[in-house]
Length: 237
Image (cartoon, rainbow, N blue to C red; front, top):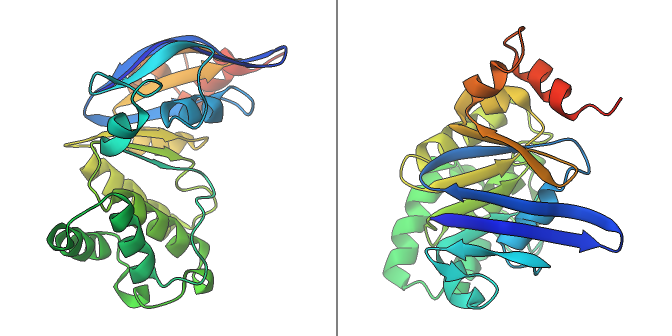
């Protein structure tokens, strides 16, 4: 379980995140908001990369600020441009990530075999990471993050710039992963929200405007359209 209590962060005079509260359990939640809404700052506080000015993040009742190492054992974060080690092969990179989490060899092998199959990486498993296409790089970064099977998975723009087939593959994987785990994705793609999100958090100017479902967000406008609802709540005239 991921609990966010009164979370705030400022950079100088700019209040990037202001007094946000929510609780996430199993399922896929989409974090929406225009550029500059505070989404990336929020994700970085959830991961412990930024310390909040106020409030706290709890993962399975452990404070990320006070007990970061223990709290993040069941957590994984994949930023928008998740860096891979270019000289490593796909297999060596994922094994490296497993070692960082002190995974036993047996657990590594079991998880590796299933992830390579689920993410369709069989044909590139021995290729160097810098030789891969953007879509494969995204999937390899995801495999590295998931090798220890975290209970909570956070992704920043996981399908940005991918072709329709690559988007479908990642969406389908995340939808299935969210059946038993907590998945939070930051995205600008409205079709993605409707395709597989169970819940929506809408952020603007650092504040949480609504916490609802995709259908609930659509119903906020007479057009019953998610893009129209998004614009009506976030467009600065």
